[in-house]
Image: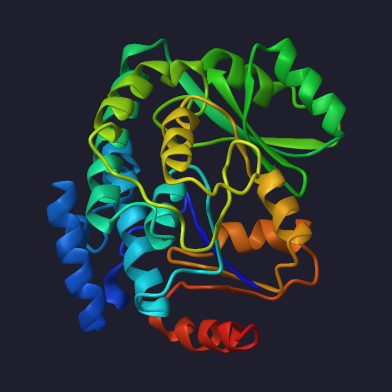
Length: 304
């Protein structure tokens, strides 16, 4: 079984869509996805600078559109055998799995990005930081002592802490033993209680959608569980905005389910990097440019 993974915020880079626009079907898909979201993802994925695409209201539609368009280029109209997305990547995974239409996923991510940006601006100054290495118990204790939330538990010895900016700065200044702490360039403390105001906006937008059962296995960030009901999948995506991402549990589920290969849709690299440490020996392909489609298709054929 091959797992299709959709990356989350932080994976995007300036110009990342330029090579993909050489494929007519991807260019047409991105134009339609831009229209659905009311965000010109083509322009932002080709000419916008790093500061512009770091804006949550732009970054999130850009990531989901890229995941959907490149996933479709790989799979056509087929659903992946297993799909999972990290953070906002869950919306891309839900679309590729058939839970949401591509247009509905884009409309929802536009609301998500704007609502999360608004929630971040309305709170005290907040931030996030990657904690790399160290003893897991000591890292957890350090975060608790600073009043920080383990917002992303990514596996492979990586945790992303989130909370008040002053607390993040204190953690950077005095990291746990044998750990490195790197503050991230983000707009706020995502996947924490600071994002609760955004949940209501997302819930209201989601209430008008009609989700369907996934066409394959779909894993949830909340606990790595398989989600078989479309309404449950959508509800989990809404709640996840203000709750931690447990990517470590998603990778554990993939191993338990017997995943034999991983393909990360564009902008690939982050999730395959985590898998190399936590899912040792499982072949992986990251779709960075169209040149990677051949290797990804060859990996899919091994499970055919």
